[in-house]
Image (cartoon, rainbow, N blue to C red):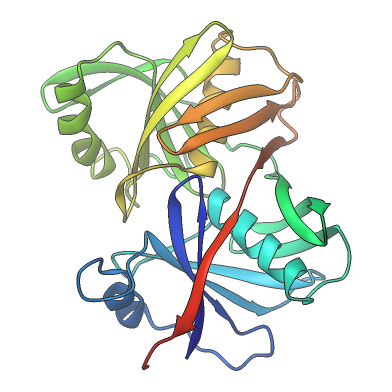
Length: 277
């Protein structure tokens, strides 16, 4: 089976092209392929599938543990680049269907290759019932106890659940609390976790990703963290904000009416090959 290896700021993926309907999804196979010692090695597997609901193509994302995620911000940039570079689409603006709905991709192209991708990630979800979170109403700058530590955080869904905290924590506390928060009983489908700080108008975040662990970048996490920061008055609405993750920078813009969040950043193709099914 032919595959391509991509990454978005070090958040890396094996990509399979089944836009012709020739592929089925196998979570156990994905788990083995993502193993960094016995497989190709990746944070997840991206499937390009036939378009649905009016979109040119469909993206499905399987985490390294074999579970399926609703959405992946770094992954969708890689899918958009692949689709244009390999002629699956012939326009620099098109729709990608995901389990979280249709997402609009806008490409920056140089020398016939995509160098940057902007995604309209849609509206952030704050209703606890829809995130989902075991609470009522919204959870914005509210207390949550995890691992015997009292935290203040915000719950946001960008098609997948996130818990964002801006608390000052030691590196040891961050490393300990990441997996504890991911499986916190407040989140029935688990959650991604963002430890964020705002300094000089820029954001820095570290992400413990649901189903993948510590990753170098998380696009939906950057969007969720920027939304939480805007809600708390730490950054401005309608203004691009640079978000630094361990793997690099993204530019995030949060609409004042929370109708959408824009994410812009790179996607890189690293290599391609064939693997026995």
